[in-house]
Image 1 (cartoon, one colour):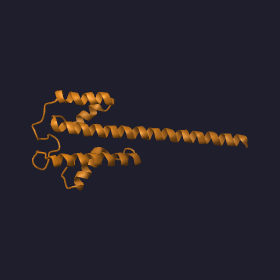
Image 2 (tube, rainbow, N blue to C red):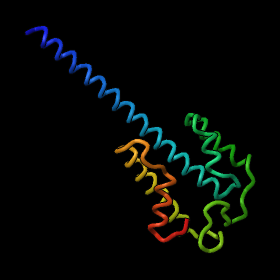
Image 3 (cartoon, one colour):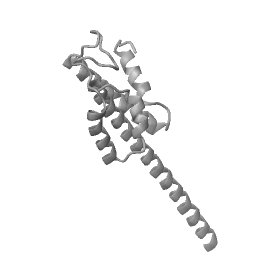
Image 4 (cartoon, helix red, strand yellow):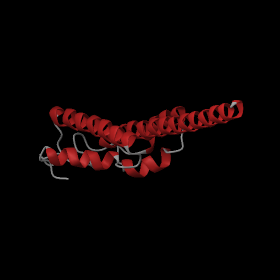
Length: 146
């Protein structure tokens, strides 16, 4: 009787440890994806003012810690040439590249919404979507050609 209790307790402890390890892994994965979404958004914002592709830069910053990433963003100002005023190289607006304040606010709102949706879906089912997929879906919902 005592041996069976000990075996059951050990089994339960092992199951709890496995579940805790899985929870820790999922938490770390979510934090990584949230960090990546925030970084992509920051790079996308910088690409409005400077001539570079945020997707290419994202590959560069994946393994950086927060301090290195902040320094990288500061260096972007000196590394890349500034875009012409009001003209976006990536994600041009409907008025031929001239972005109004409303357009910028809308893009920021859609970006935040896409990051939230992607994080929620990836929490429920890891690897099920990406920021880019959700962002394009939101643009299509609002009648914006991708």
